Length: 605
Image (tube, rainbow, N blue to C red; front, side):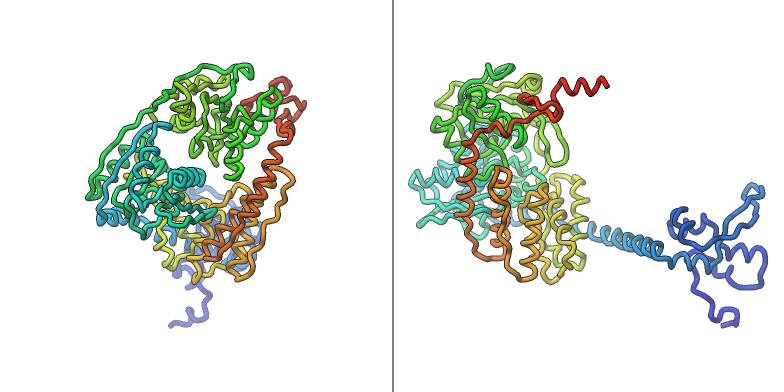
């Protein structure tokens, strides 16, 4: 090696080695200088960062490409190295290197994940000989009734539904009919001696047991991005001689094409409503309401406020909404059945799993928050809810009305065919948990791919799992316990409630550190606290079940439900929504927290 190369400083990225040695010359001097443009292109630093953290440059005069004289600020190589070593700059460059490495890993993970498709479910199903019966029809057309009638005479069997309420309804019906049935949901297990049937939520489908009959309910949910994978797996893999699949008409084309992949016989049974639906016009106000009506709102606040306004008008209201514990919902339903109340105010929770003798459905609202944005309900959602109007044997027909301006959407959508389902949801593949990539990157790559639609399927939304994993960011990831971490972060949790997420995180940390899982302590002084306490018990129960530790909190949850019943009996006027400026009562169906008069005054200013 020649003397001029000995002891030379490390070459800076992008610098031509030939320009660093040799006899000094004006060109050589300029080559060793770094101007702002070169620093920015090499390292991606902003002008402000260079001027703030780099040593003071010197000014030189050069000609630009057009040959015109111009002044430039330049830094020597030593000054550039000194600037790059500054703390904020060094941290920025390290973060950029980390991002580049992460992007490289994400590309590799996407390539790995792209290998997974529904093919392995379908391949499994091709080795099972089964007969399929596809029950197709709108709400209240007797689909599930006919399937359950077959199940009663062909045990052992299983019922698989989307909600605990549906599983509980079938549990009660089968036992009342003299068919011993156990119940299994994420919230609880009710064993029955001599049971030949299991009624469960679909996520808890038993794939190891052979059944004579399996009933899969509400199969149109196969396209749901959060839960649809459970329906895909059940249809492909449940081990039963005869599988009855109940669905809305928009799901038939897809599920029929799915069943054709199996070496199985199938038949399609169409069901029609025995109590037809008709549009009932515009509901102009309280004077148009009648006993046995159900008003539909799309938030807990709207339901409670509307119920309070109705009780001021002399009605007695039962309320049903998603955050209400199942036992409390059942109590509200029973009050209506017993005549203690004469009208129902509910969210779209009434659309699944709740059978009530309702003659008319009145849409007080038609806009809902879907977890991302406020939007109008679609045709399928509207008709699913509207289908609860009219009960065969009690009513000749069911009526559906709109409240005020909502009537037009109701009239246009009622009875219209929903868009056919073209996709099924594919679950995140647990097999990739054995890879060397961090769990966060595996989930992140899958979530970015979830927006892509391939022929015939979409990917499960793991956004909630990513949110829960981020809540454990202070806990180092233990690759040896990755399966456990994944089980914990896929526990059903309302991630929109920060208090519940914090409670979940405290429980998950305790499990991962081998400590005692804390009991919830959110109180019971009002409805919101009771609902949160109930959800927290549910979270604790789910987590304990996932680690195989028995935990019975039925007594605590029953006490909460009794407290909710007490609060429901009290005066509901405290829940009435009022204008945030003048305090005036807001009318039924109001989407805003400001009355019209205050809004106009604000617009005129």
